[in-house]
Length: 325
Image (cartoon, rainbow, N blue to C red; front, side, top):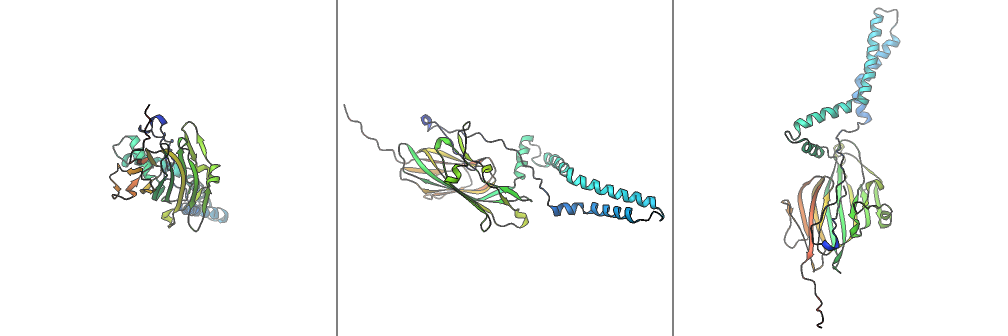
């Protein structure tokens, strides 16, 4: 799901309520992490030691010593145990944990709720990447012929709260109807790896989906950045900045799709002509002072939730009097 989704309307029905873009199919992510080599070694150590004892006994215990058949039998048993332990760890443990976890989740997570609701709760629990300090800024031009140019900047930080390294690349989508211009993208960890793309670089990565009427810079077209887990002591966040332009009606509604788990969100107006007024709301968590150009939503968002903002003429447009005939 793209970080930002702008709704479209036909020219003849700009004042009508817009309809949202159909959401992509989501595949629930299970929170089962690939173990490191060190973790595998710790799990397999007892089996490896048992197998080593069996191999040493088989190779070094003299055949002429007493109870040699019993020693060889035990040595073979230890070697077989090592083989079974390694095979179980590599091929069966993960599947077994998944099945047991699903069973427990149905009982403990959202107990009594329909299976579909339990699935949504499990999706929240299995969240790996979380955004913070999300700020979306607008700069409006003077309205002309019923339309206005809007320069939008989106900034946020994202951290990995899983137990393993995760690859990440941002994504942005806007409706083709609004003639989107993707101008700038920068993401990375300060002091380490930073990826920067200008409008020329981004134009070659844009994909247009005619069936949905959207233009997208997909994450698959961008290099992935490896994010280390916060639990492993990683303190630096991946910082992301998008800049793009749109041509929209002078009276319209912008819907910001929260496509990833996000802690708090801010809408900010950089430039607003006197003819226009900008508002946002419909959320109990909203903090906004009269006369301020900032709307802050102090709550956590899950993927699929939205923020809404409206702009419209605060003064009636000047009308040219018609000559009398």
